[in-house]
Image (cartoon, rainbow, N blue to C red; front, side, top):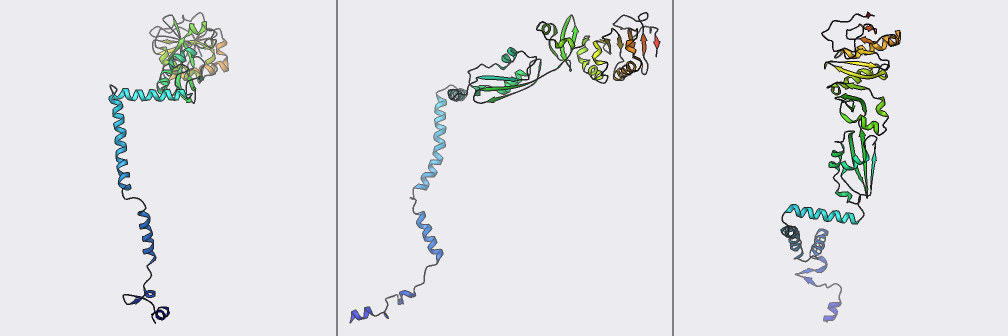
Amino acid sequence: MSARLMANPQLRPTLAGRPRDEMPTPPRAMAASAQRGNRRRAMPRWAKPAIKTALIVAPILFLLGAAGAAWKRPSLAETVAAAHDGLLRSTSSLGFTLSEILVVGRNETERDTVMDALGVRRGEPILSIDLAEAKARLEELPWVSAASIERRLPGILYIRLAERQPMAIWQHDRQFTVIDRAGRPLADAMELARRGNQRIDTLPQVIGANAPQQVQSLLTALEQAPTIKPRVLSASWISDRRWNLQLDNGVTVKLPEGAGMPMALRQLAEMDSKGKALDRDIVAIDLRQPERAILQTSATAQLPGWEEETKKKPPGKKI
């Protein structure tokens, strides 16, 4: 009897008075939450606190190790220096040593002068070279106006120089010094001549105690008279006020002071182009008066120097 009852499909077991197929199905959200809970429980409960502890303890251990290393040395600076030396030795063993020095733009500066200023030697670790200090030492050299240095690993030091241009030879106290446009001394002219430098033969001479400080304004004015500039052999700074020019044909040109000098030189160039004034039998031209030129012949001219600002004007022909 009981077996037939259990086999009857119309009879189903109940839970708390309700049939099993009438129980509600769990929502998907509840199922997903259960799965996430299972995944979180996959990590042991002690793992998260252990990770936090490791993150705190690791920096402390590192600092303690550094402090222990520093304790063995008199100062922290020596510790840092020792670490730096060890790093350089390591890079040197890997081939990062100075093997070649390339210099571009060197014309007047001597090779040994560049090497002395650099203060480096082949075979030393290339990473140990202080590029900023080497650049500053190079730019202290008389001929060098600017320098740049870079490493080309593993072993090349590349240097580019920009040199000052010689513009005149300053004659003072029986010395001859090559100067640039700004009047800065560059080298001894006699020494350059002994070395066979032929460039200095083309430079004009400037004479006077303060001539270098005034040479830039003179060169600027001469550039506005391109036919006169190549004919200037020397220029004398007179009474600390103005210039006298000595031309290649022996003619002395007295220029006015200040802003009138460029105009006077243009006037001289125009006179020479139109009337060949510099080809005449004259020894001097006085351009100190605006819009007026006085040509002096050998019979009326004074000796070069002409520091006669308070003397009587010599007679001459006015044009």
